[in-house]
Length: 91
Image (tube, rainbow, N blue to C red; front, top):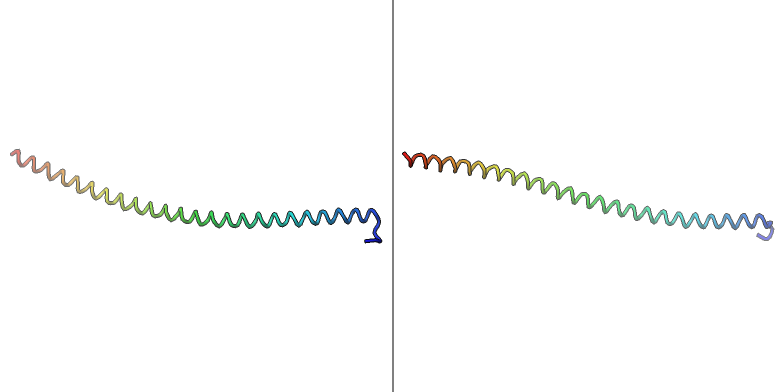
């Protein structure tokens, strides 16, 4: 270092400053990447839970609709029987 000219020392100092800034930037980038990976993983897990819940709800809705259709058919049949009884009693 003693044999370097003033210009060479100045250039070396600038290079060292740039190298240090690069290392700092690289560390920040790695941290950001880790945080993004963690966020991405958490988001995927949450999306999976939401999709499962949606499938559960759709399954329940299908069963509920079938039950309501069955109940409607039973109610319609009951109404027909009651109407038939009313007509028979009027005779």
